[in-house]
Length: 139
Image 1 (cartoon, rainbow, N blue to C red):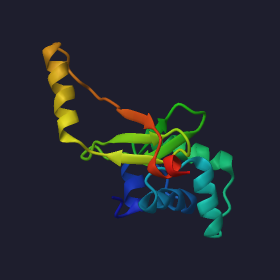
Image 2: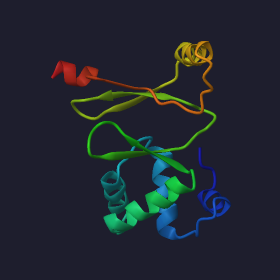
Image 3: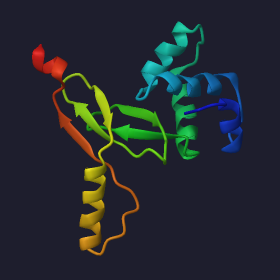
């Protein structure tokens, strides 16, 4: 994951500030977060940053390919660290919003096979499976 947040920001051409470091560090312990969760986490650490500033920082991180912005069919954007070596897909609970990452080599192989059979070069893909998590099914 992120070993040195300052170095990562500098390498991506982003000015290093304490607020940007604090926001980036949240991704060390949270895989999927929205701007309001980031705001709450920062407040718990005694850091007061406006939600508008958080959105601006997230936008600059996305533009610099540090994070991915995900939209799972609702009006809320979720962010995660970009990791090109570890492609994963998502299970999304439509009841509570839980996001579960998974990696399945059979699915990856099948997608590439289908593309090849159709003479199609894959640049990227996203697989999101929507349903109900175990906790919501038991409630």
